[in-house]
Image (cartoon, rainbow, N blue to C red; front, side, top):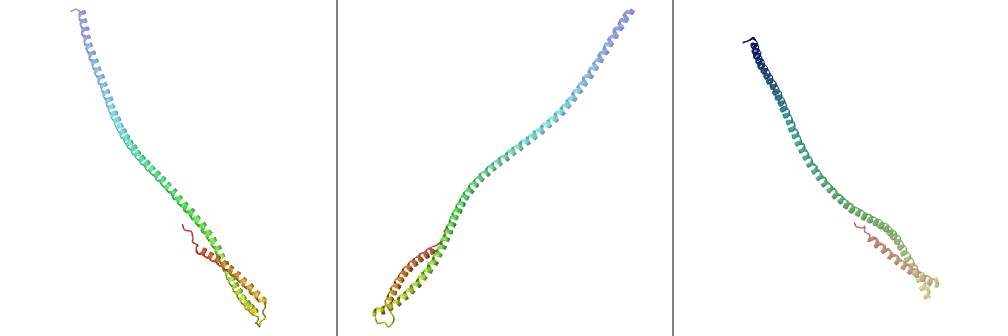
Length: 220
């Protein structure tokens, strides 16, 4: 083999060896890169799983909180409905009490008005009765005075009648005259007038006494 051929063979073998080495190197480098990438992806996956688990827990906690809030809202709505019902019932009761109070006030006002009327009537009756008592006192005095005047006139008339009778008989030893007969007639007429006035006053007194006796306080 010539020197040139030997050299060519050596270059060829060397090239093949170098190519094999390069192939092995690049294959090893590619494997390391793939493993690193896989490790990175695995780490990212694990981190994503952790984040997902955390997010899932947060979602579950949020759902629980929402459910609690929904329950609270339902409870509040129930209480609000109960309060509205109670408020409506209270308003109805207030309206009933208002009408009842209005009616009671009207009845009371009517009673007060009736009492005021009765009081006014009673006051007037008392005034009238006071007047009646004054009239009775005056009439009683007048009747008593007339009675005394009648007795006096009757006594004087009797004395004059005796003298007049003696004068008419003409046998009296006393000093009698026609004047005694005139006095008799005068006292007799005056006595009759006094008796008429006495009877009128006495009837008026009886009327006043009946009015006083019939006095009664107004009833409610």
